[in-house]
Amino acid sequence: MFMNVYLETNRLILRQFVVDDLNNLFNLNSDFEVMRYINGGLPTSYHDIEKNLSKYLESYEKNTNLGFWAAIEKISNKFIGWFHFLTTTNFAYLTEFNLVSGNEIALGYRLCKDDWNRGFASEGSKAIIAKGFSELGVTKVVSWALIENKASIRVMEKAGLRREKEFCFSENQLPNLLASERKAAIYGLSKDEFIAKYNN
Image (cartoon, rainbow, N blue to C red; front, side, top):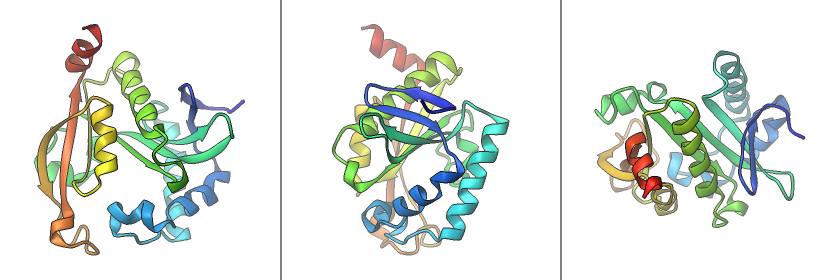
């Protein structure tokens, strides 16, 4: 059984990252299709992956409720990607674009291409949102994606989030994408909306 499990769903275990996940992260971020709507398809260097993983591991010492979580498929015991649940203050551009107040929690996900279209992103997102509202004192969850990333937007909608605003990343922020490709949308769901939805 995995140590430091964050939550479980019918098909997934979300757990803390460990040092041995380095190659899992490197392979995930080396896939052009995975990175296409993140930075135009550029892979992340091994050195940067190492730095990111170190940050994930350090963050658990400060807060075991918020962070990055490795997603493992139960039936195969395979790493399929990650989810994050973080304060929006980790993303300076959200404040810069006046998209958040700073009290929201940001949901994110990145899955291996082989595991797309299997419902894992929606399953994990719904479970994290429910945990946030029922156990962690979260009052609002937000998530965002480039408008061209229709699969990610479907995940947000299936998880109950609703479109709130549209915005556009700058060329400096996403230099490998055209202006038309940098258009994005932020989605949100408050605890009150969540309770109303599931009490009806």
